[in-house]
Image 1 (cartoon, rainbow, N blue to C red):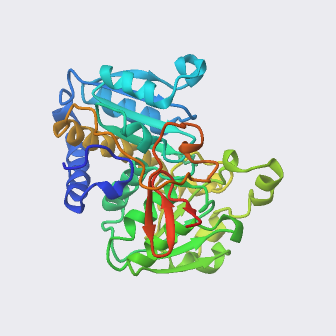
Image 2 (image 1 turned 60 degrees about the vertical axis):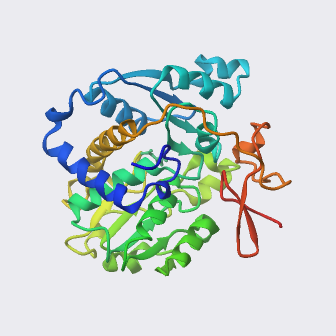
Length: 356
Ligand code: NCD
């Protein structure tokens, strides 16, 4: 595999991605063949933000491959509480571990970490930005539960603004031919500009809706997400968005018989519990596919790993990102990295556009 780090699934070539999805299926059929594949390797899980599924899914994947684990899930118990920078933490832990999995509430934190790590880094969620291994999980689930990744009408319902799983999934599925996207949210929780730009870039058919009942009958896949409470400026703003979209048996009665309902979980109130018994609900199976997807990814990354410090990266522009959720706001030593799209200057860490 060519990609050293997985910050965004875009870094994996299409052929490598197809191979990981295929390989996840092989592992699922014969998990016992792989019990020693990572023997002698250590994974560090650095979780600066709460997690149940992603952290344990990575840990399960590594343990099922015969590897070992170090890490923290409460930065308060690490030197981070003494004021250690991300750069120093990662630089040191990459002397201990063979692979690092990081989750942080700042956008671009995984990219920043990868710039100072001697070993490969996997982004397990950077604020409201991206979550590539959840998307890998979703792609594996769709491959085996829907039979294809192309020519699908995909509804994404809930918090399309702050939902990092939504952003990564749209970016990945936009590449496959014939996919149509229905973005179902309140106007306040529409997907960010860089996600829409990606749909435009790939010439995808997409539309917006604020009524799940109106569109559910057209969908092949319904990807539900919770409203991301922790990303709102105030409780009042969150309360105004909460409970607007709820999938229940009544709505599902209007859906296609072969619809697949996915959810990255945790669920709050956006899917009624009665839906769990519908054969179209695949969100619990999705968590199991996530372990096989991560096992496949870990094996491929460790196979092709190069142990070395990356070259020093210099600033591309004499400007600072003004997104308050960007990692450059707190880690002041980071170089300023921007890329240009048309007239806009976008931050390479968080994809936020700044005035040129
Ligand atoms: C998601 C996340 O953390 O972004 N959960 C997950 O990783 N499976 C979704 C969420 O928190 O809503």
